[in-house]
Image (cartoon, rainbow, N blue to C red):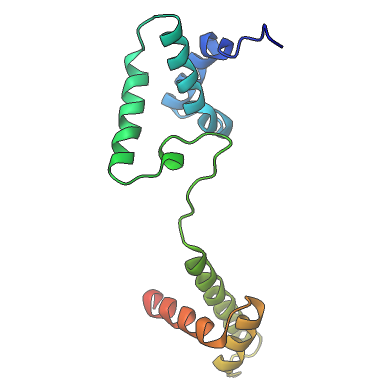
Length: 151
């Protein structure tokens, strides 16, 4: 294992092929996921072999660093296969959206079944609160906050 060349992939033509696929839009999800890992690898290869670093690598890192200086998160700007991305919504926002969708779907399903049927929103909120392990008040606040935004 000591003779393993961890930079071999950075020297291989695969890197250039991957870069071309990303540029022309034919890259797979795996290509995109591994792109910055391969950029870092190529950067290290060039530095350790005392070769100039290609401008496209410098531009890619400069772009990522600029986004981080503007408030971006490291794991979003330089995604690596083993680092999770920052979620779009917080846990509270995700819970509120799930509660809202659950209630709205129940209302729509009931109206589709029987258009004259009137559901009690309080009962739906109680059920959603129970299902999502929160209080009735939290479920109600989350539901009406989104209902106001989406209506």
